[in-house]
Amino acid sequence: MSELTSQLNVRMNRELKLAGDQALAKAGLSPSTIIRMLWEKLSEPGEHLNPILAALGTQPPTEQTATDQGDRIALVQEGAQLFEKGCLELGISVPVSSPSTWKDVREESIDARLRERGMA
Image (cartoon, rainbow, N blue to C red; front, side, top):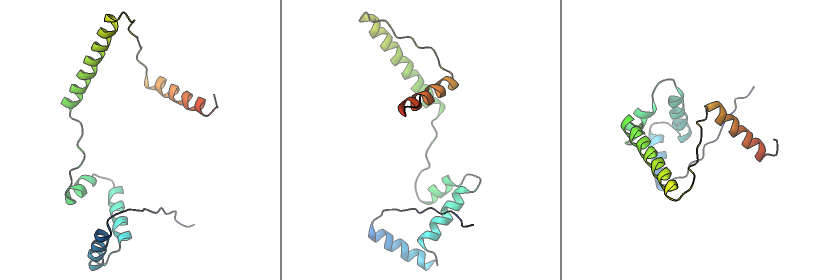
């Protein structure tokens, strides 16, 4: 049985490619080999992305801090209060929604996709 493979295509500046190809050739590597090595390292268990990004001179993506999340929640709540105040000032009834469970949201999403495809 043959192994399934995928092809990766990358666009880059021609001079950059030639310079990189020369550096790899000095190390006895091809572009395909170095990409394969990178993907193998990334697929191993453990945290390999951040050290690789650091070696490449870039910062790993940062996780949102609890403070940032709290600030965003406060802004959403403030926006909801402003919306409610505006509705009341205009004499519009304030829409009320009940919290949905994850299961309800999932079911609604599935139903919507089935309707889009004419299957519901």
